[in-house]
Length: 371
Image (tube, rainbow, N blue to C red; front, side):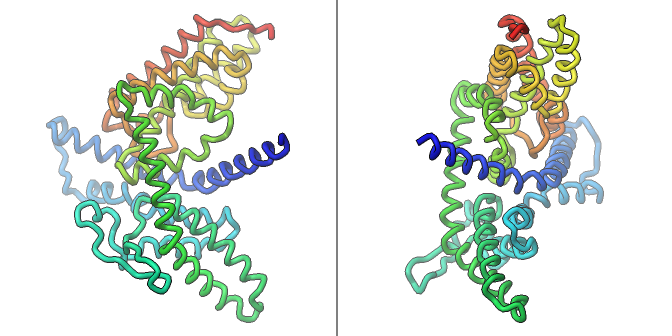
């Protein structure tokens, strides 16, 4: 039984790592778009409230606004290209599968809410119908589709004679994968993805900030287990569906809190070796890299980790109460404010709460350096 459990655990960790490998290369593009989006929103706010006199019809602003959402509009293509590399398929075929899912002959997904589904298509010899709607804003379906594409492509490379492989394999791979994607994979995994995002959003929006409190409190534990690699799906899915990710500010609060707890250890300890480790680890956590703080200090003495969890919970509580959302993903901590330029004061308050609660709670709990 233990061997089965261990095998299942290893499979789960492998899946999580694979998702991380898919999404990490995309993050710079998402960060760039998020920063530009935050900048345009802050400019709009200042212009609309009379704080700045800027001509928003000027070419630099028009182009800035256009560039800001390009990565989100064509997100499936980025994911398709990245997924194919991870799954061992042709990256350009992966991009083509994503292009099929965004094809202009399909109804734009953003128009469904206002116009309804305009056209259905009978598939599998009349067995059932599917809505002819594209996949703007979806993340999971393209990952699954490219996994299937890579599997089919690699199998065909082994079967098809080398003389005709260049022609037959791409043709058969794209048609079979495309048909399976639009008729089976897409509809099923859109439902599952929407259910996941709806569930996360309902947790975040629990009354009195309860959801943010819980997520902020347990977030660091998920970092220890490695589950956090899949959170890019939540961030990107929320941005695509709601315009903001409400998950990232809570994650940012948890990261800041780890820094606050480590800072408390650095301030109070008399051990020079621990002090020399704690201060740079605390700064690293406040910049969004928590591994040195978590594994070097907080988990080592346990109680600082508890203090950090309480700090993350408090910061997450505030973020949920005020509805704080980020325009992008991949940046937390000090520089996370660049993704919250539409609401910088609330971000700073959340930062101060997470840091302060973690710092003082850790001092109150104390820790035993002799162990």
